[in-house]
Amino acid sequence: MLLASALVVSACSGPAVSSSPSGPALPAVLTIDSRGGPPIQVLAGSTVLAQVACGGHLTVGPDEANIPPLPWNLVVRTESDRTILVTGTISALPAWLVLVGSDASLGSLPVDAPSGPPCPS
Image 1 (cartoon, rainbow, N blue to C red):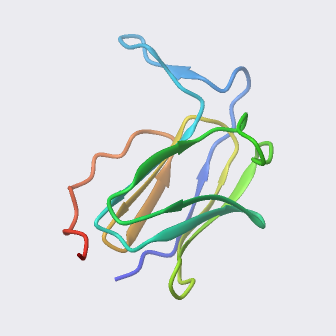
Image 2 (cartoon, rainbow, N blue to C red):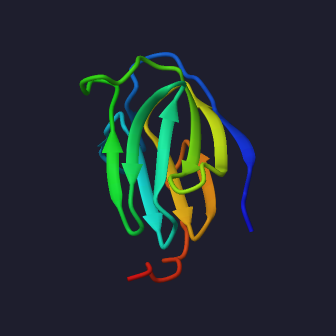
């Protein structure tokens, strides 16, 4: 089952770094975690921010080369047939994108999700 929902990551004023009272500051990046999902593309407008394989994990920050400034109007789609899995707007970082199988979630807090199905060999 595909999840095609729009989640908006709310904007906040101040530096794009978050911290909790009991923990260290979190880096101002989009963390992408694929847990048994198909290969995906993560786009901000027409710019491909990342391509992630099944089982892949990476981060994308606004200070990297060829990455547009915030806000990002994200589209997460499968590489094979370009099926849209989730869309949303990232106005502040950190943010998390987790793909479990073909279900995707996008949010401003770390996602506690199962490990997902095994990747095809």
